[in-house]
Length: 121
Image (cartoon, rainbow, N blue to C red):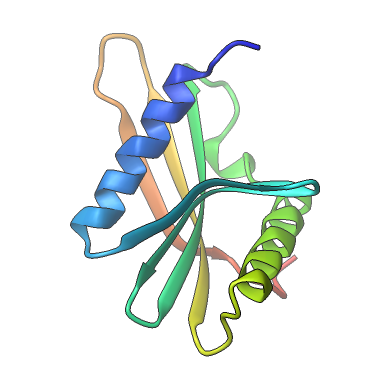
């Protein structure tokens, strides 16, 4: 199995960004059999579940990469995480980080807080 270094580097860049904003990274690549969340972070009473999408020279609109079916999976994994860790009195948010790289240029990061919500699909 090939390791996706570009994807890993992209997730680290987003984790660094969140830490710079005062978030504590709780999990990275949190997996359940029905899905995965790239980054789970907390700042006070706010927990964010972040989907990171990174592409090189993509012809697909970056905003189309997290479809409703993917959103449902992320929400299910988030619910499982919260239940497993007895998290009930926190505000939860679903964010998307989009990284687009064109050869020879710095990656362009678009961070979308509240990109979708539990009832939003």
